[in-house]
Figure 1 (cartoon, rainbow, N blue to C red):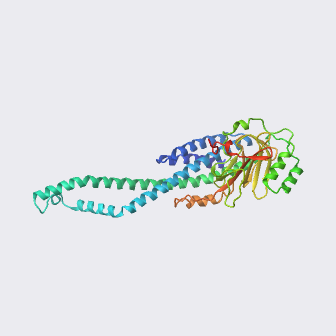
Figure 2 (figure 1 turned 135 degrees about the vertical axis):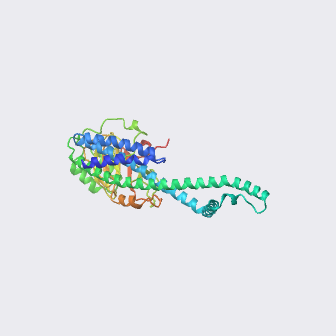
Figure 3 (figure 1 turned 30 degrees about the vertical axis):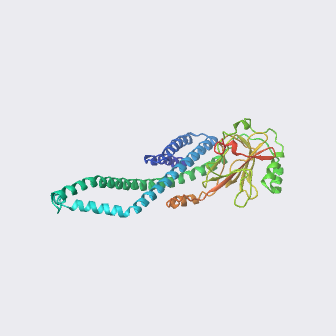
Amino acid sequence: MRAAALLLALALALGQPARAADPAAPEAQAAAAELREAVAALSAAEGSRERVSALTRTIRAYERGFGALRDALRRATAREAEIEASFAARRERIGALLGAMAMMERGAEPLLLLHPDGPIGTARSGMILASVTPALQAEAETLRAELDELRRVRELQAEVAETLQRGLDAAQAARTALAQAIQDRTDLPRRFLDDPEELKALVASADSLDSFAAGLFRMETDIGAPMGDFAGAKGTLPLPVQGTLLRRAGEADAAGIRRPGLLIATRPGALVTLPWPATVRYRGPLLDYGNVMIAEPASGYLLVLAGLASVFGETGDVLDAGAPVGLMGGIAPEGAILAGGDKDGGGAERTETLYIELRQGKEPVDPAPWFTETRED
């Protein structure tokens, strides 16, 4: 498979920047090992369900490695700026040092030992020279070490940038393959949940996410959600997406609006997965939230994921923990960012946002305590 070949190339490439001494290197190495295992599972996968699982692991490993490598690139860029600023601040001293060393190198050895004041002056100048020489040598060694470090930093920048671009191509191929594998999947367990016409009417009449979720909760189910102690898993769940917490429940945004869920900033094209086994109650566009996935992780609970560019699965699907449910938007601009977005060291990049809301009964509850990354111990 072309996607598998590309991803194998990425797995091999991810380990390369670990040769440089950088705090992100162990993270990149771990991601590379995880990616190799995922690619091996992808090659051995039989059937669409196994391919979905293997592709999901592959994309997750890529995202983890991508973050580590970008961190290495940012650190390298920052270190380059520090060294160049140090050179600029010491420009005059360095110039004087190089001039003195050049004069000493050109001078004949016997003349350097003579002084016009005679033997006493010569002895004094010799003592001064003996005391100055180690300092000059130390300054020269420091300068040489910093120049060597600057060269290594620039090599790391070029190497990581190339790896990131190659990884982007492979990850896009994996996302496409994942969408196709999900479309081909026909052996998922399904549960009849809601009358399709009633669900359509609820979508059409909803004037807010709150009213839609409350209406969805009231609709009858014939079997219920998957078994499992969801309440007992509080504080142990992974976030559905790799990203950074922007706002907690109840915090106001720039417009002063307060929502009862979490807002997570993600990279463009990030994969969104279920943190707990759940039944899909609704998937599709809703109001101004973009695509929304509403899953039932346990009887009496609804997990709302809003802001996706694409959603996978169908209403009634019973999904395992870690199952992919969609992708964030903005995949295309990521390539332009890799080409130059980090070169200035600013770290600016376009981000997507995933809104996570958890509802118990008809009321929303703070989802932060359920996730390891957002709970407050």
